[in-house]
Length: 96
Image 1: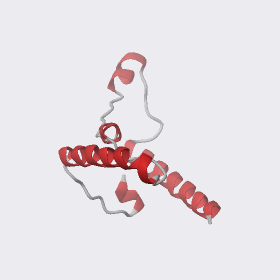
Image 2: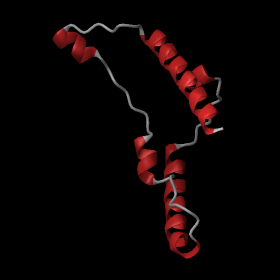
Image 3: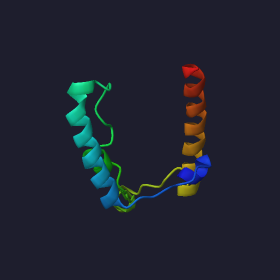
């Protein structure tokens, strides 16, 4: 999906991200009450788990109810990426 936004993707091993998340959560919990940095860390083990790769298939829907997609996958991704770019631009203008 990142290629549709012209962004380069940097990948870190899952185990390393999970370890860093545990460390960040520990540090933020230890220092939160003492120095009030504002909020706890957003990088948590559960956020790493939830951001993992997920795969979905429409095979069951095709088989059981005769589902046919409105757009082919590549076209649907392009449409979604265009919408997100447009929405991202509106939110950036509103925040300025």
